[in-house]
Image 1 (cartoon, one colour):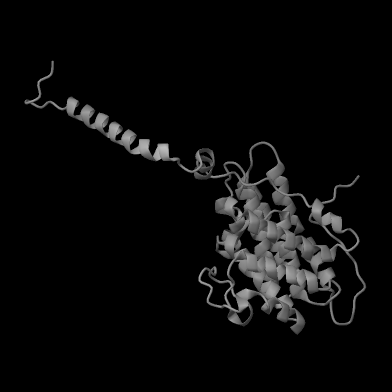
Image 2 (image 1 turned 180 degrees about the horizontal axis):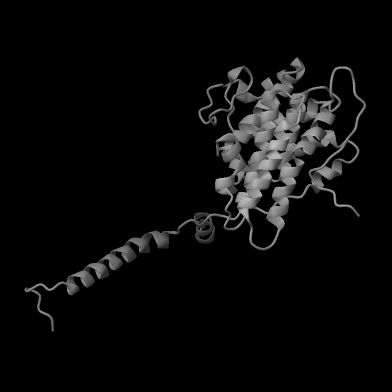
Length: 302
């Protein structure tokens, strides 16, 4: 039985004179970035020592080939999808034990940046906004969200802006916009921004987390993945269950601080009382040891 990559897709659909269908553009994007995504997954799944220098060379060739491929998408739409693919590849490879990928990261080498954890969501919201703006009805639905009635939200991430330049509060606003698009879009439309936004949503289902990896943001991540699945399901009308079958990567290893925090939990009152006493006793022993080692004439030793 031939092996089929989870990233590959071929969904032919009858075209219309207005241009390529969003459904076909979505399939083209999956095929376009499949080689680098599949290579990252295969490398992460392999046993034994990993040669990151060799992997970087192969990945560079795949990226060069991808950049030479023609596309009907606008430049900003294609760049958003490229950022999503690069960020997903980097997160997969940087999550490996003792990873040597940081110096070879695609974002660093190809884009000169390392902020994909936040830039991904900014680009995703830009694509969602562009897709919703194609029809006034869709834009009105998005504008009903409270965030657009109060543009002075103080915790808006830098670079995230919505319709009319209004600031986006946080990733929950992105999930809300993605859910709106899922409810109103038509995969048989000719909206390239819809295809770009849907491909980025698919990267979330493939395992990209970015700034949502913190445990305290699990609820935000759950809402984001739910909205992403609803949006991508538009492009799997004959087998919507396949969205649920997309393999999820194992979570990245926790940092030492996170492991200690999880193990110790919040300090109790007994710890808060005993900790100063233990520090004082330790300081006393250190000072006593230092004084005892000094040859002072006024100290008489037995």
